[in-house]
Every structure is written in C-alpha cells, then in structure tokens.
Amino acid sequence: MPNRRRARRSPALLLAAVVASTVALVATTLSTPAQAATQSSRASATHAQQADQHWTRAQRAKHALARAKKAFSPDTPANERPDATLALRNLFLLKDALSPADRAEADKLSQRPNEPATVGDANILVHYNPAELNPAAYTVDQALATFQYVANTYASSGYRRPKPDGSKGGDGRIDIYLAPLEPGLYGYCTTDQKKLSKPGHYDVWAYCVLDNDYAGFPAHTPLQNLQVTAAHEYYHATQFAYDIADDGWFLESTATWAEDELYPSVNDNLQYLKDSPITRPGRPMDKFGGVFHYGVWNFFRYLTEHYPAKTGAMPGLLLKMWQYADSSKGPRKDLYSTQAINKALKKADHTSMAEQFANYSAATRATHLTFQEGAALNYPSKPLAGAATLAKHKHKSFKAKLDHLTSASYQFVPGGGTSKLKVTVKMAPKNRGSRAVYVVYGPGGIVQFKSIKVNGHGVGHKKIVFDGSVSAVEVTLVDASTRYRDCYRRQTPYACQGVPVDDNLKAIVKAKAA
Picture 1 (cartoon, rainbow, N blue to C red):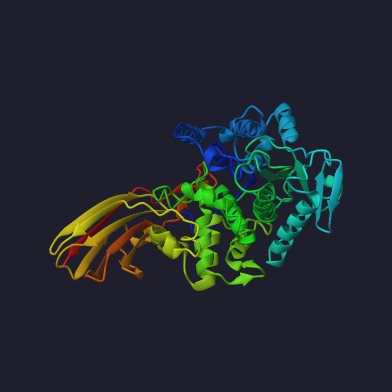
Picture 2: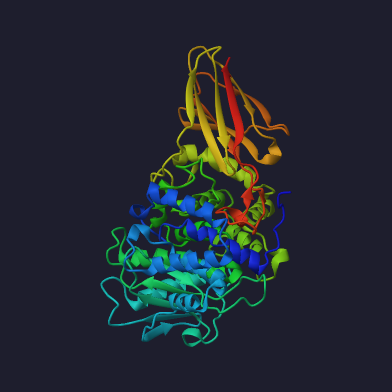
C-alpha cells in the first residue's frame, strides 16, 4: 500500500537512501545557466540512479565521497561541479559506512577553513583573512551586516536559529567563513557534527563558507552575489536545525525561494526558470537533479503570492512547511516534503498540494498575467502540448501520458460560427491525482480560470463560452499525485526516496465546438 503517512526513518534505511540525490547532482549551489548539465551528463546521471538502487550501502558511501571530492577539486570544470551543500550532506549521512581511510578523507572535506580574523555579534561569527579580502568587492563589515540582516529576518519571521556548535569555531555562534572557493562555487553550508543527537532526529548544527570576492561571476555585483548566497545558504543552515535529511528538491527549491524574499531586486534565481516546471512540465516536480530543482522555487512563489499572510517579514506558509518537516521531535511527527507542503496548505485554507499544483500548472501558461513580477521580469511560459482551431461542429482530441507532479496544456481557438465549447476529460481516477483546469482568454487577458470537476472514475465535462469574446480556451491535464511506496527503502530521486505510485497515467481531452 502507498505510504500516506510518513514512514518511520531508521538511520540505516535513511542513510542508505539519501545518496540518490547525490548521483543526480551536476551543478553547484547557485550555479549559473552556463553551468547547467549537458544532455549526456543527464543521461549518465539517470544511469547512475538506476545502478545505485543495486549498490550496497558501502558502495553508496564511496560514491558520496567521490562526489564530494569532485565538488571541491580544482580540476573539476565549473559546469560539472556537484552541488557542494548536498554532496556534503549526503556524505555526512553515509560517512559511517566508509573504511577508516576513506572516513579520514571525508573528515578533511568537512574541515573548516582556517581564517585568522573574526568579527561578529551575539549570534554570528564571521571568519576572514584581511590579506585575502578584496575591499573593491565587498568589505567584512558589509558581509557581517548582510548576515545580520538575513539571520534576524529569518528569526523574526518565526524560524529556528541554527543550532549552537559548542566550541567549534571558537564558541557556540554559527560560523561564517569568507574564503577563496573554486570557480563556479558561490558558497555552501555543511555540518561537522560527529553524529546525530538521537536516532531518527536529523536536526544538526551548521557552518557556512562563502566566496571572498566573487571574481569571475558575470552576473550582478560581488555584493549582490554575497547577498543572495547568504540568503540561500543561511536558509540551509536554518533547515538543518529542522531536518538535514529531508528531500533534496525541497531543501534547494525553498532556499532559492528565500533569496527572492530577502533580496527581491537582485533576481538571481530568475536564471533557473529556464529549466523548471514552467519550461519542462513533463518532468516530475519533486525529481532531484541537474538545476531543475532550483527552478522549482517558482512553485513556492506561486503559493506565497496566493497565501501571502506573513509571520514577521516573510510569508508564513513555508515556515509552517518546515515546522511540519521538523525531525527534532522524532520520527512520529516528522513529515517528508510533499506531506509537509500538503499539511501546511490544508491548515492555511483547507486546500491541498494537488489542487494548488493543478492551478500552478495552468497558471504557468500565462506567467505575465498570473505572477506579480511575471511581465516585468519576462518569465518564460509553459509550452503547449497541442493546439487546434475549431469551427462549428468540429472536434479534436489530444492524448497524454502523465507522471506524478506533471501536466500537459492544450489550446483550442474558435473558428467560424462557434458559441460554446464542450470539453470532456477522461483520466485516471481522481484518487490517483487526476485534475483538470481550464482557462478562458479574451482580448483583455484571462476571463475565467476554473477547475473541471473530475469524478471518481476520472471523467469530467464542461461547457465553455466559445464565441467572439473568446480568443482561446486552454485545458490543462494534471497528475498531481504525491503517493509513494517503499519510502526510505529505495534510492530514487523523488520525495521520501520512494517509488511513485501514479506514473505513466493515460489522459485524454476531447473538445467539440457547438
């Protein structure tokens, strides 16, 4: 049976599973579009994922070590450098399966930089080398002020502060290191905690390392790069105080969302929309790998634009998600990504992830109209899966096969003599995630945006105005399923490292002009 509640995560099962996100990594944290993976590297990552399901835990640990080494090697091309934060996260969770010699190598990778000078406040300690810091890029005072703003904004918005690390770095404050990093690496956060406080409790302390000058980064000023990196990476440090072992796509997409909340004018995360659920609606939204998971920030932007109620300075919806994903109280209260999202939406407005993912999937067809900044920032638009012009008595059908958390949109344009459009959808049963949304466009923009009610058998009907006041009608078919089996018992790149239950489902839309 599919896991509707969170499976209890024993350390052995989870530690065996998390490296699935590592094998898919092909880009650094906050990488640029030029650093996106090539098709061949994506194919290699897919092959590695398939092979990984048959690896022993020791083999996975060895692979995690290799990925982490690659993330920091000066010989790694920038466009092939793995995500340092997630590579080190996976290594931390698998390190005990390494040989003593390999474990020593892993410990070296998580060693903190040795910077001689410090400056800080009650919560943050910034470490730096005055001889290496370029004041033309940014000053240490600017770095401290940036982290103070980021840390205090998160804390005043209800988030837990990063856990104290004892005497690491000098005292219990979170340590931020400004150090030279390899090309393409903006920064990372990790932990050097030796072990979990309790089995099943994945809340750990963190420290962060950011590039000390951002030389060679073509987009934005060095200070702007520092700002969005601080917002992103410190959000990781905050996440780690809840659950370092949560799903990789959820960790990265929400951290990328946070950049835009704290520094809305920088818009560094705009680059990821080129490879996102907007441009690739046929890829499951929870599939970790490449740079796609960074582009998923846009889904959370959609949610917070529709549920903008704030806790402090930030929308409270994502805070609720992380509170539901909190592992510090043990496995019984710890939800994985899609469960936490669904529960937060239910509490916010008696809605669900399925309903909101369906609405989002339709909204991305006209991002210039459906997102507050979509027109000004020239968001891309979702491609159509099919289109037809229908004159009176003409009809057209389109077929699709949908995986979980994917969609396909179809457009119907009025021909001569039409007044109504009769739409029928035939999909999998509703409890398997089937949803449908239609949008009516007029000369001035969107006229209607509504769901087509799909019954228990997956069938829905709708009559829609299709006269001279209508320029087009679009129907979006959606597989909004978040059902998985074998959570934390497989090594997949999806939520809970489980196997999606509702993939490759047939869906048909039939439209007839009357």
